[in-house]
Amino acid sequence: MTERRPGRSATMTVLDDRIEMAEECGELTLDVLFEWLEKMPIPEGTKVEIVGGNIFMSPQRDIHWETIRMVTWALEDRFGRKAKVFSDVRIDFPGRLNGYCPDVAKLRDGATKNDEGRWRYQDVEFIAEVISK
Image 1: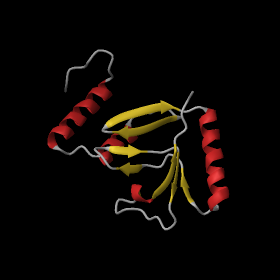
Image 2: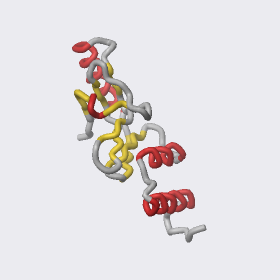
Image 3: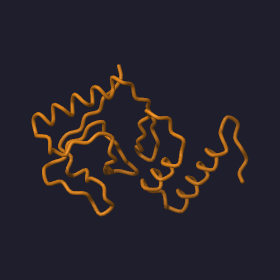
Image 4: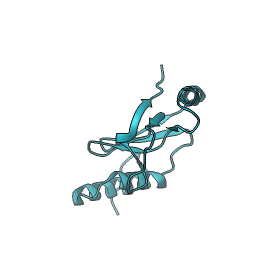
C-alpha cells in the first residue's frame, strides 16, 4: 500500500500507482487507460478522452447535445440515414496514446472496423467538435 497523498482518494492513489507501474513495464496502452476509466466513478454528462496519454474530462451541457444533433441531422440530410455518422465513439488516432471520441464523426462509405472492433481513423471523412464560448 502506498502513502496517501493529501487531497487524493485512495482509489486515485492506487490508480496512479498502477499507471506508473504500467509505464515502467511498457504496458500502458489506450486499451489499458480506457479499461481503468470504465472502472472510475465519472460523473454522468462528462466526456472523457485520452490525448497523448493524458485524460481529459469535460462537462457537457444541453446546448452541446442539441448542437451535435443539428450537425448529425445535416450530415444525414446530405448523405442519407444509412451514412456512418457517430457521436462520442472512440477512434484511435496516430501518435502516442491518442484515443479521441469526437462529438461527431462521419466515416466513408464502406468503412470497416479494425481487428480490435474499433473504427479506423483512416476512414474518417469529417469530424466536428462542439466547443463552449
